[in-house]
Amino acid sequence: MADDFEARLQEVLRQLESRLQRLSSERSRLDGASSEVLSAIGDVAPASITTQIRTTNASIGQAVAEATKTVQEWIQQAFAVLLMRRYVEGWREVGGKATVVSRELHPDILESDTKWEGIGAREYFQTVSLQSTSAARIGEVGTKTADALEQSSALMLSFYVAILPMVVKIIIAIVQALVALGSVIVAAAAALRAGVRGVLLWPIVGMLVWQALTALGNALRVTLSNTAQMRTAGLALLASLVAQWSWVGSLQVQLRTAFPNMRWPEATTGRFDDSAAGSGWSVIPPPRR
Image (cartoon, rainbow, N blue to C red):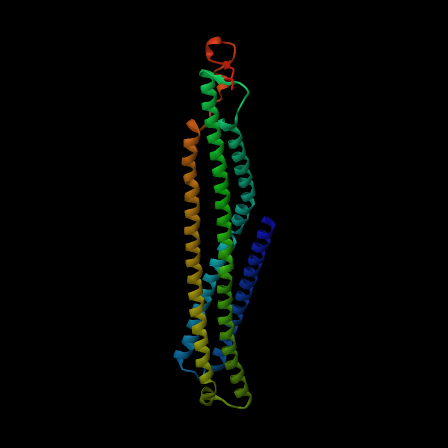
């Protein structure tokens, strides 16, 4: 079970890292394509157009850097997910064993062939009852802690799965902008080879430049939007984790009620033995039926 979870997590993280590398590569290509376009149309395009290309390209670069940083910060926390999952079975085993001990210590099942009464008997059964309660609480805490670890690790895996398509959307938008810029570069190069120079070049590439600007604007919008969504998802995840661990913290309060002075209940053998006749350790035969 744990191995399957780790395999799924590692695969999702591998895909995220792969997409981040692709995003970085496409971002570099976009930067180069923007420079080529500016070089091709710089002499004929209005200054407002070239300024907008530069500004939008720079904004995309900043937005992509922020998106990459956000994802990388979450990837760096993946070791915590693995630790959570690996401790699940250990806590569940502790809870299960403590629950069994609690049942075996219950006074109702500690029967004998003779009836035992007196001070020693009362102290003994009172202590056994406390120890049974304490063991039961350990079982409850162990099981609930295992549940919290399991749910928290599942939440984080779901988060990684959720942000993967967000990164892919950014990549797609940048690739679309690259295609649009590439069309401008190709058209300008073809026009120059045909001998078109000066102001005549702008009517040929002008429409393509506007399309490229639209694609650049869309890439910026998609990058900013999905980065915001990733951060929102991250905040929601943190809120869920805080709720989980606040609940686990409340278990400490429960432990105080099960452990007098935060210690395991004292055994009666330290105060009673069978050497004093007045201690109450008397065995009375059970009534005949």
